Figure 1 (cartoon, rainbow, N blue to C red):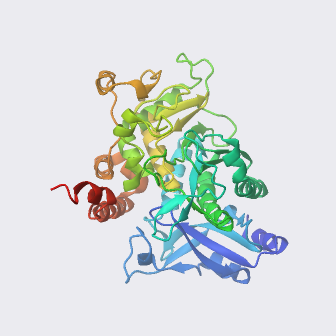
Figure 2 (cartoon, rainbow, N blue to C red):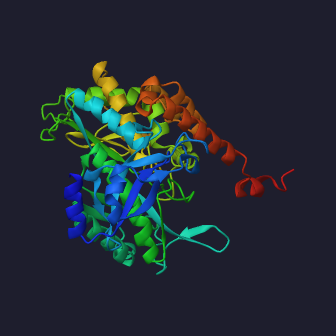
Length: 452
């Protein structure tokens, strides 16, 4: 839309308040509120931010203002608040693209993809928990009716019905936005839920997933809950992912280039798809660092969990770098012909950086004509460590430091972020590890306090 077209829509929608929204390094939405009458000033660069006040933006207290430049095509009415709309923004400093802007990193990767004749379509599975804070600061499952107690609660009607008001509100809002939601369910853990909406091009999906997290926080609050996309809030329950479903299409978005019904492997995937997948597998350890970027992620993605299972009997997360058919024990699943699902991606992902990394790794596979080998079939959870080694499968990184080391050694995935943002990412995440490592946990007190 042109600025004049946007102003007409603002009048039609009776909007009086604008949200200038970008994300920090963690993918956390950052906003400034602007009266709609100041729209022209906003477009001209009035939304300034002190970058040193947020994580990972490469600024100090002496730095020039970061300016949020709105993408007018991202106009998103805020359905839970009358008269408000959101614009996803790119960050500039002194009139130039800012290399620490996550959305800019994705747009840069998408431009390279377009030059090669492709566009990437992405869908996400938005898993999250509803919790409550207790007076002592700990959290508890949000279960006001005291019925979400099953050992295997996935798809449980009673627990779904108890939270139907929350879920229906989200679905209604997504319908209003035109996202075409098609499912909601109670997930594998108690008080865990998932909402699905139609896939779109990568930038649109990243913008929508960011906005969805904003939406869950506000809708959950109305029902007395906190919506958390934290990967593993409870040690005894399965964690929350945001699995990416990925395919390459022509630049007009009319033909799925991953689809080939004559695939000799029987998965319905094209040679292009396998080469793209070959790149993802070749760079999987560094990719994991970008799509599972927190200390907490590696309590969800652990070989120990893989071998012992969680309370439901499975972790539903992979431990090995592998691909297969419609098989949830793989890192990359083929749920149907024409797309791959990556099951490592967590609820903590910065979707802009995650998708940018997928593009660069996949393009490397296409350019080098990498083949991922034959698919792994059967239940990988049943394999012993010796059998895993026998199949020459690598394990996913088992800690944040291990993942950061993999990223530091992978020039291709680093190129998705850019040199400046890579170094900022490594610095911020290593600081995160040190803060965690210097914390004395309840487990340590329970184990060691009177042991010696």
